Image 1 (cartoon, rainbow, N blue to C red):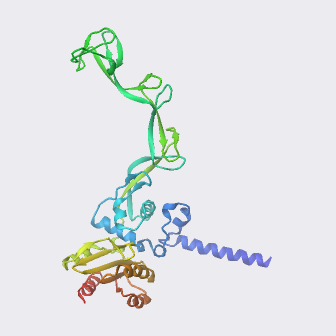
Image 2: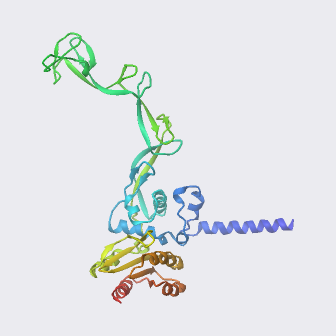
Image 3: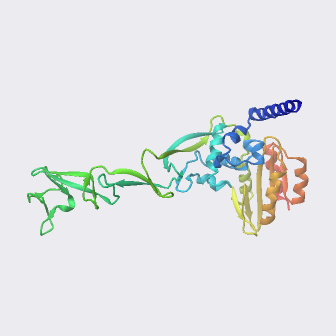
Length: 364
């Protein structure tokens, strides 16, 4: 009995600990719990545990919205149902990871979502590769064609346009029933009917075909009552967005431009191994190359950012590699950066950071 009581107390203590983590300001644990089985939310990293703004790709997305575009618009895609090409260009996120991150940023009032369009997906396999199929209303064949019918009001005859009798000189057409010449350019006794469908299998004519949808992935017809709709959203910065949580990269880019460097930001660079890496700034001038990563943490920048950068720097062999840590870095980071040959610049004063960066760039 005493053992059961102690087990109960331990469970209660653990439950209170979980509740404390979930309820703490800025906690992302409700997202982890709610979306544990949602693939688009599986972007959990050490940086994210310390705060949403610590994710480098979040910083890149926000810099994109601040400096380059006002709104992130989706593009329909047959594989992923939507893609955000601007984000793919400046981040290392996969297309299926981006919607979940944007929804999360919206939930935290960093971004605002705007309805863009609605797309159809298969209700069985969720593929957006769905095509419209129009069937004959009589025999349900897809072998139908759209044609224009001619109604001759004088004799009441109705037929497809291609069944009119052509004159020997090819200059006029006659009604198949009464033989009169028809004025197809607005004649008072001729009525043009658009949108009739003729079935090549049963030869019957119908005004409205039966509409179905065909999933090319699971190869089945879907009735209109069984299809699923997915909303696509565009995103812009929220009015309540706090710009103090973003490291503006444009001042650093402008510094490199003033010093005569060619710039890609964010930029991709292939190492000697053939693997391509992304850096916040890739700057080149003559035979010099400078690689810069800018890392933000809501608490303190730890070793993980430097360790990740070291592998890329070792493979790319730049003239200089610089890690800018905001607002401050762990003491171990300074020691490790010297071992790795990466210059560490840390602090929270943007003007001082720029001045220090300039000195590092100009130093031999």
